[in-house]
Image 1 (cartoon, rainbow, N blue to C red):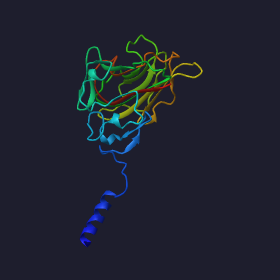
Image 2 (image 1 turned 30 degrees about the vertical axis):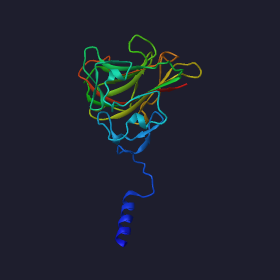
Image 3 (image 1 turned 180 degrees about the vertical axis):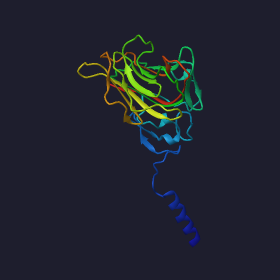
Image 4 (image 1 turned 120 degrees about the horizontal axis):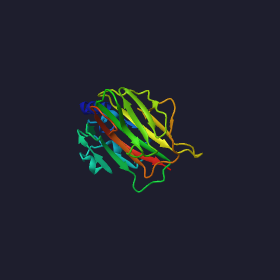
Length: 249
């Protein structure tokens, strides 16, 4: 009897009997996401490493307007409004070199009455061009001659936020091969009717000294986001995961 009680006490001490753990089944802790919800932390899986527990999207609360985490193995054309030259590889979205670029696009349907659009994603560069402009994320339209778009672009190891009629702002974050970053772009209408305001965070921190102001005052409709190798030249291999499109009125 004494041996049994000692064994029970040791077992309870090892697993903290009667206390709830903040650890998630995938091995990470519950943390707030840049999109405003909660999820498993990045050590549960990131940009190509499939977690063993619940997927990123199922952990978000409240659920965003659109979320894709690629854990089900579905091809990009089954998840996005448009997919060109992109694949699902090892639980992540992969975009590589093509003559016309490679990207995915998601358009909000039905069209919401948003005054703010957010695009959040995890990115891990495998290969980056050594020179030339590479747009890796956009809120707005795909065609370069259309107004009202916010771009995250790379040029060598320099990242910048720019867009329609805007003076580009250099990011404090520098892209590195094989390093993962969580990025959130936001495009916001002003209550006074002024120009659209664009911001970016990297790993939860503001990545520019000031927002960029676009040359338009209204969000593009219907809202659209793009990820991939847009308007680029040179060898490129990017892995995206945990993609969230959301907004608010």
